[in-house]
Amino acid sequence: MSATEAVMFWDGVYAARPAPDAPRPNIRLVETVTGLPPGDALDLGCGSGGDALWLARQGWRVRAVDISGVAAERLAGHARAHGLGGLVDAVRHDLRGSFREGRFDLVCAHYLHTPFDLDRASVLRTAAHALRPGGRLLVVDHGSTAPWSWDQDPEARFPAPEEVASDLALDPGTWRVERADAPRRTATGPDGRTAEVVDHVLLVRRTG
Image 1 (cartoon, helix red, strand yellow):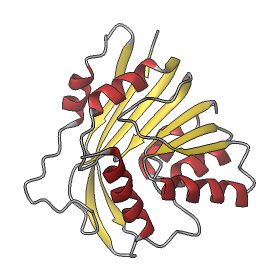
Image 2 (image 1 turned 90 degrees about the vertical axis):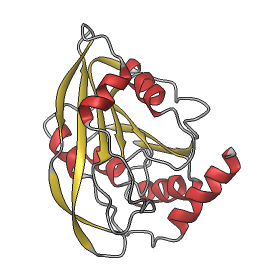
Image 3 (image 1 turned 60 degrees about the vertical axis):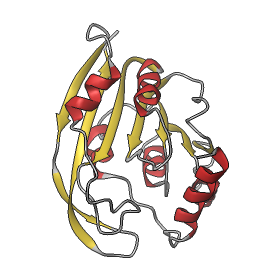
Image 4 (image 1 turned 180 degrees about the horizontal axis):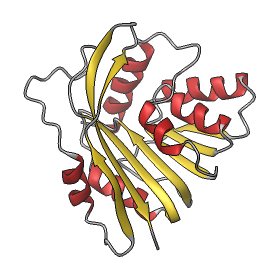
């Protein structure tokens, strides 16, 4: 599938959803980052922008990317409206072609799934290498299918966090897995429906 088709698909996904007045952060981000000193963060696949806005309110400087220009523009508008424009840099960016330059104290990738070709392991490996010593890579994947998901494939496979970590092939002398588990939670979809879902959580810290 072409880059244009991927952009059109994800623009359509976000355009079809009502823009939230106050996007919420993902709970796995909040529980991971609360208490950490703020620094430079990169949000891969920023979506509705709840994570980037929450990080900025905690004092983080956030670069946020999404293949959907609709999502990136909405986030940029929210940031300006809430006086966070100086802390949030939101742009449309296709990770299949390149990775944003910079060094980061945190890189988060929440639900970075797509029906289009994406070498996810390569993207996340590059993210790990973009961390400063002491920085963290937080990867949160779907461990189940929510009723409102764009992907309702009954045969969908959900790799365990340990499998995701193995695919990254990071040197254990430089990166350490701090968390790899599959907690459950009650989630609320874009239309207000709730359902119990499973998250696959991987947290990797660069130690050197």
